Image 1: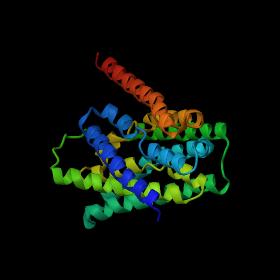
Image 2 (image 1 turned 30 degrees about the vertical axis):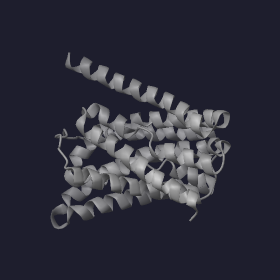
Image 3 (image 1 turned 30 degrees about the horizontal axis):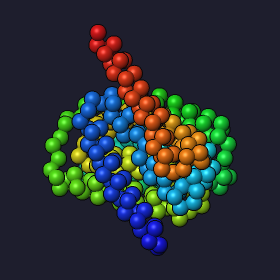
Image 4 (image 1 turned 180 degrees about the vertical axis):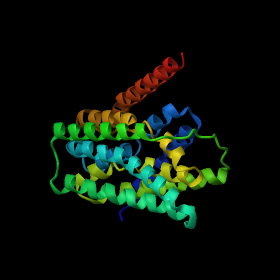
Length: 277
């Protein structure tokens, strides 16, 4: 392992772990109509694209975006699979320890995501419009399914510092693993793995550990809609990275992503206020 790779993994561990821990804690504290949008903010993709551009070229980032877009649709399916598994195992949990249930939900969901993503790599998907169509269809299907699930309101919790630290360490480790895989595999794998919802997966694990499946339903109900912020980041990166390089490209790609996330939050809040009038 080169010194450059070690630096990338440490950076992913610290920045990814810290950022996603903050977002996950925030998602548990704010009104649930915003939680899915917060959990869907771009995190893994920022590090994945940045290090890919640093290790190869900004043009390489633009080249793998078409493969990333349909993988984003699969990433949206991930929480739907996870929460349904959580609900299933919850009914069978009498003789199972909670840790094993959480582990099984994570492993099965990750394996199913990987199997679904394999065709994108095997056939080296590079058609942008086709990828967008796949993403939109999967996001719509996921959103419709989530609206059929009944959730329960989160009760705000006060976590001790040791618990928050363990969460950050776990999230950072998962982000580092995803970063390593994206950097050591071929560019198509890099584009697909950059869309693996490592932040969301780790957040679901932490939430699941201390909450019921019904609480998870509420937390991820609007993840499919929130994924539009990641989609906008990917499209912006495809444009800005080749033109401006990885540093300015990363910064400017965040702008449309933040605008989209803010607009979604405003729409959600307006709908909520209208429903109680």
